[in-house]
Amino acid sequence: MTANPKYIVSSRINLVLLTSLAITVLISLPRLLLWQRLTPGRYSVETNVTELSLRALYIFLTSIVYFIIHLQTHTGKIGFITINYNRFWQRTLISILTFFILNTLLFRFHVFLFSPRTNAPLFKFLFNINMVITVILTILFAQVFRLLLYNYQMRLTNASLLKANAETKYEVLKNQVNPHFLFNSLNTINALITTNQQAAVDFVNNMSDVYRYALKSHELNSIPLQEELQFIAAYTEVLKGRYGNKMQIEVQVIPASKQYRIPPMALQILVENAVKHNIASHNKPLHIRIFNNEAAELVVTNNRQQRHRPEPSTGVGLQNLNQRCQYLSNHSLIIQQTESSFSVTIPLMNQI
Image (cartoon, rainbow, N blue to C red):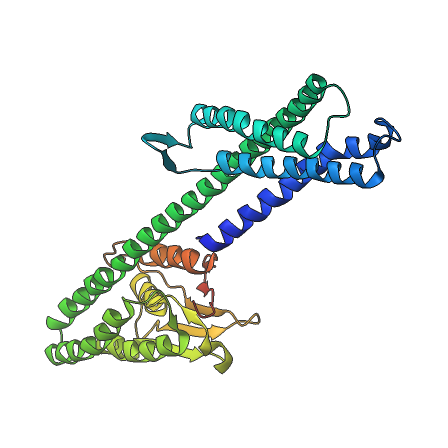
């Protein structure tokens, strides 16, 4: 989650201008409503409108100046003095100094153009009060904006940290797949060497193709279902090296769903999980089916005939796949188990 710097600058400028305009209207409106009651007949309508407009302009410009001071977030220098605008007391000192300079200049400029309607001390007092109210309102609004901006930046930072943390966890999860796959493959080779050496050789040859795909997919977050199905076809040949006709894998996937993506090695993990935890024999063949349900979701199911002594397992396969699906699609695996079957529904994803 990142924010466009140009967009932030543009939004801040618009916010300052609109708020300054609102403060101007808020302070000028009472005077505008009562201007005809102030020394009636003494000034022309044009003079009153011009003076009121100029006073409104003073408020608007003053508000902008103080927004600039109080919305700064960096460190600046005035001569040999370093100013940290993130410290309120330093901004306050600059505000007081600016007030005396700006208020004096605007007052003298106004008196030069328009003679006071009341006695000079009273006019100056009212003029100063008007400017003080402008400054106080602007500083209050600026402080609110600083808090909102700080909260927004904190949320951006937290979101970035959460994303980085999630990506790190995901990389760790991905890195668990290949060792897990290799561990179970070595177990298969070990079993074949003692029973059928030629089958072991064929298994190793097939394994080279399968593991090449595993290494390739290791670099990807997701992969098209079409490629994963092609891989499962090759992986089936590897499994036949050990089980022969003791297990059957049936694939019935509609063409439209093959354009979607799934985590790499997802089908392999589920097929391997079925083989690992169930009996596969001539009397009790293991049937694994990959298909789309009525909602066009991808389902992997197998008949349940649980082993009395399950093969050694690291325990990361199914849990790993579920966490990867959550990371990539915000959807978990749907696992359903009955006395006779075990099925897992995998969320299909669009291009990531």
